[in-house]
Image 1 (cartoon, one colour):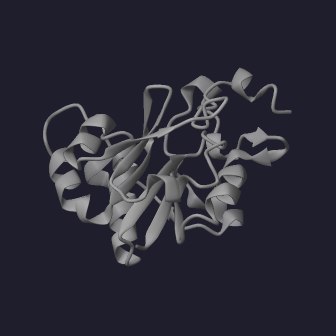
Image 2: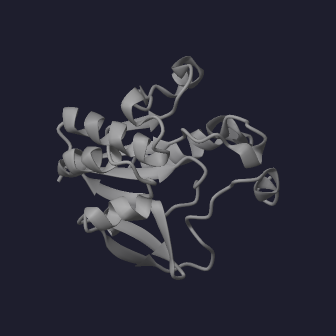
Length: 187
């Protein structure tokens, strides 16, 4: 089972004052560096979902996947769509997705989520974008995104029949660093 990975960094980061969340420093290093370091032993190849000038990520050596214009209005599912299309071209069977603002995920995440399709759950809360998507789901996802509807990740997960994988830990390993104050305490 070949697993590619996609780091999702295409959001607007409004709660971070519009800063490029992937490049915000945590313990003196960009969030992207933390996520990449934890993800690299678990899946390959790895790409980054981000819009705008890809040159700002050149130091990381990752392919940068922008949202396809057709799906640009679909939120994070546009990133998943671009990631699945890229993963298919890489010959992968599954795509592991992780948001760039979730740097504390388990070092065994890919193995824990296998076999896919699956999604992470902690303390009863589903973390929709911490998921293992089958590459074969791409046509169904594209059809879903072409509908005139609200595009909810949980609906796409239900459509691909993702099973929930429950994680236990003293603190939420999928906690998002959404606001500047979320970074404090990790100095």
